[in-house]
Amino acid sequence: MKFRQLGHTGLEVSEIGWGSEHMEGASLAVTQAVVNTALDGGVNIIDAFMPQPGIRSNLGHALAGRRNEVILQGHIGAVMKNGQYARSRDVQQCDVFIKDFLSRFNTDYIDIGMMHFIDTDEDYTEAFESDYIEYVQSLKRDGVIRFLGVSTHSPSTGMKMIGTGLIDVVMFSINPVFDFASGENMFALMFQGKKMERLKLDTVRTEFYAACARKGVGITVMKALGGGRLLSAELSSLGVPLSVSQCVSFALDRPSVSSVLLGAKDVSEMEQALSYEHSTSEERDYTSIMESGLPLQDAKCLYCNHCLPCPQGIDIAAVTKFLDIAVIHDSASINAHYEALSAHGGDCSQCGSCEENCPFGINIITNMREAARIFGK
Figure 1 (tube, rainbow, N blue to C red):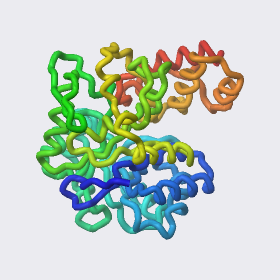
Figure 2: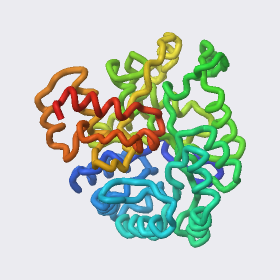
Figure 3: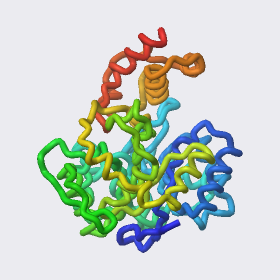
Figure 4: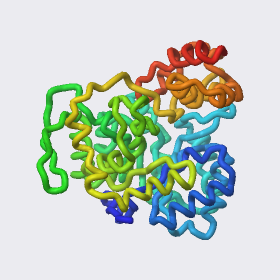
């Protein structure tokens, strides 16, 4: 495993990290197996934004005796409301879930305390112009968190946040689809010492990476595989599949990026993530895909569930994932999985709260209608 400096923190992080959200619902045995595979393979940074008690407890048990091997990213503002994941800037709510995190992970500190999911000007105001920021800074002063981070999907909001001088680390969504430009600006890149063809990259995102590098703000990467979509020709917005190694290599080539956090849900996926370290330069080369000039298709759901909470209790990510699979090929098992959900696409009240919450501009209501049409409920 190779390691990189995480901005100005002094921490060295593995270039392959782990986003553990997909362990929700997994058994303790599976969780332990994935944790041990990751740590034995050299992974030393884990993101755990999830507020659900079961996954936190399992991860805490799995890390027993190995806490000192891990740099933990824990999120301030990821809470549970009415049995569902939600976001909050309420200090009392945040404090309950930070204390819960510490207890269930059997630790007295969080290496990187992430101000959770700040994407818009409204999010920025609620976080940085309220008692929430005072609470977050008190956690750092008291040693509950060692470094202050923020998770965002917006480069413009990210630019405002690193401009405060308070942020040590940014967790940011990076993959080729997100970084393609819609405009005409062109940038020449260097790839392993050879000049590539000019690629169209988004100017705002490129400037954000450069600003992070100037200010010594480290970047940890989420959504590098696009929720797994980029690995599938049928599901990818590129229309062609990329490999894990190509996606990781693309993210690691962005300025200030220190670690790519992949969302492995079992040992085989973790081993696939770790295989990047043994991949060849040819296997990592993403330039041929970039040079193909394929038009981007409509935005696709990444199954992150940041659209929650849903007033109807719909697990939107699960409904959309089953819908996507059903569109490609009919399967009795997919129908059964969909049937087993406690709420379905047809239960959608079309209130629009999910689309307001979604960081990627997905037409969720349309997806719910389509799921109801295909599955009959």
